[in-house]
Image 1 (cartoon, helix red, strand yellow):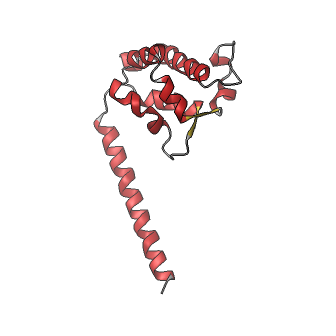
Image 2: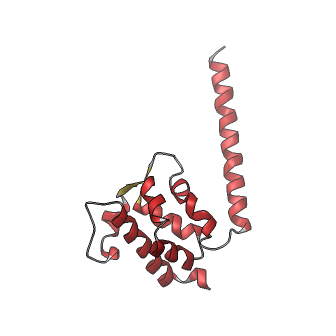
Image 3: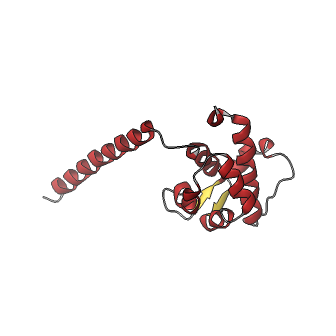
Length: 136
């Protein structure tokens, strides 16, 4: 039931994102409620280094803890939120990541990842075959 609490999610994700914006020295620190600025903030990019600073912030880590995000994941959040290793993440990706990290991993999470990896392996094998045939 706690993981279904959308009000808690919204409140604590907002706290984390406000801390992120503050610590990023963003030119854009809104006074308005973040809910009124969702479209503008969703595409705002921040450096992954800032996420590393935010997870050292007591208010931000308290928000994550209340969302049942495991403290062992805090140090890896910049990697988790930046799967393409580009060095920046959007605020929208951070919000999505927070939602998906709540609570313990479920078996369905593991199976989903396994199926994605298998699909990627098949696609990679096809690419290798195409590459071999074009080099002949």
